[in-house]
Image 1 (cartoon, one colour):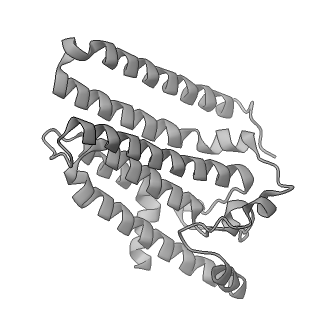
Image 2 (image 1 turned 180 degrees about the horizontal axis):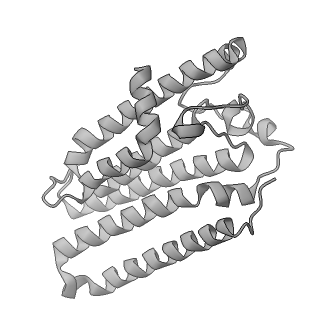
Length: 239
């Protein structure tokens, strides 16, 4: 399991988008066929994805953690236990799972539900297993004690007020480190919606909706490239 986790960790940025491509396959079977069910499915999916993005934003803003070293291998200089990490050992991964699950639900693809979501869950379970094996070797008893206090996946937010009291939320770090994630899933979800609307209604019957969604994609893209420009030209310097 550890070897599998190390493999997924190294190539996760390439593997996961390929799995998401299942949502765009023409002819994938829908989970729900009624229009009302599809609307509620989209609402549910977006809500779940947003909750995952909020969790990631809070995690990065309060106490950032970096575990990718040279050649994309696991690396950790310190064991971060502050901020959201005081309530969940893997809040970024749990946020990712919520985002992936939410987009998958909103995409209404039985193919993705049957194969994509189980694969992603397995991949993250393997990555977490590999990471925790590395951290136990790296930090020993300190990490074992941390594991006894804090849940692996599901956050326990009791006492969150005391945890973040006195902590500074780093907006610059949030933008620099996180701008690509919301761009990817929001753009993907908008494109999925455009595809479904076009296939169901045709261009003439839905052109106003399609153009509205296209404008939203342009707004999201503008925000992405603005953040990228600020980062590249070091306008947002991290301490």
